[in-house]
Image 1 (cartoon, rainbow, N blue to C red):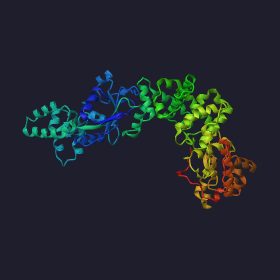
Image 2: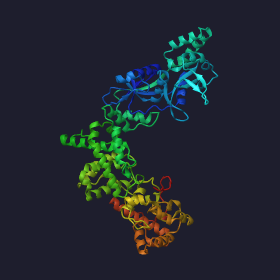
Image 3: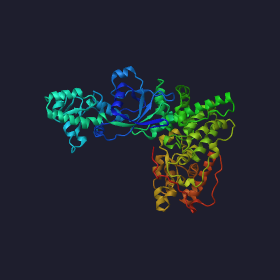
Image 4: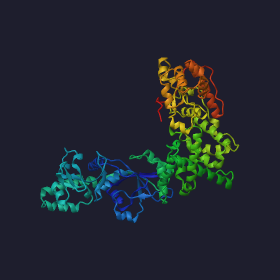
Length: 615
């Protein structure tokens, strides 16, 4: 069947294996290594011998202008073919494991490189099928296909040889047919007939074996989808994400890596070096290769747009700024070389900025995705990004994104707005769309209970940024103390106390009743009432009550309500104080509701209840 960018057909197994042998069919260099174990290969061979389906394969025609991938021969391809560096006619997109297993077991004269099913250790095996047992319908086909070690001898634990097929004569005697002769059996059969002195019974047995078993292999066809050479890269990437059945899903980075490899540029090696530099900053620990590519693509397309505007004016054909899949796949090696180092530095600048906002650790990063436009913005601003006034505007944009919770979906489109709009805004342009659209509902505070929420992490950081001090030491929280003191989010009114007072879990577990304190301070707080642990902290740390009041206010806590163990009053006062803090960060007013939140039902959102955890 022929349609659009692909053909759907059936291809004889023998033809596919011949193409692999000749180098006409290879793998794209991004494909993972062959990983199937011994048992899985035997099951595959069993299915083919019974003419059972083993699934469709997907191939891509080479030679298209839009797609250039560095190919590599399949494991077991003859060395002379590798030496010739034959250009393949097609590459395998889906079906690598099956075709590699079948090629090695049925076509290659060398042992199959596989893994022990139980220990996962590397082994080499040859595969045989028992001629007589295969013809008996009551025998399980899985039991008649045998794998033997590289020396073709199976030994017991005591070292005794239980099966030896190390010579053709031993194969004939045991009645075990080597499956790597299935497409070239004439010489083996002649030897078999001669060994048995052309006995009619043996000849008849092999005739039946050939017609019923061998023919299953020689006539076997695989359904195949063949993507034509004009298929866009984006479509190839989607195919991998949605259709690929083996191993890990292919990423955009994998495809770009393969495309660059065709121009003899090893993108993955370059990225790994940059990744090590970036991971020196704790907040960048989970930065992905695709994030980096998105930042590069934003800057490449921004430059292309600016150049087009300068030469074409207001033409309708002006390209847009984008970092969608198709734009990433259109990157050239020269684009990477021009922007990679700048983008690396942009992410490092972003990490330093975030540390200044008291976001130190990757698990406390509200949105990993927001790193992409942030880094691109710093690259575009250059030295201007170091100016205090400009950084304040960047901070406002950042917190609008966090508390507006705007980076959970449709992020590529937002990135395309963020980069030019923030850069223009800090140079006295209009407010960015992200700032305009950001909105925080007061009721949302009640539903922020775990690190699953960007806004939850945001409040944690804001409290530290604005100078909250540890209850015990009175010290503000900087990068050093954050890690040295194991600063984390803990309850202000302890859980046990709240349960004893029969407070609702959804209330006392919200961010309103949590604040950053050190692990040691939290141990002192324990399960005591606030009035008790405050007295203990003041005594042990020699903190005067007036100073303790200052420390509590740095956390947006009204001291009197805590000293009186008045949860309801504390809750209302702190809720209002946190809303004011969010307003200051976003630079916009939050509309309040009239009733007190504890007098009406709380707004619920679907959010998994998971405990906060220590660093």
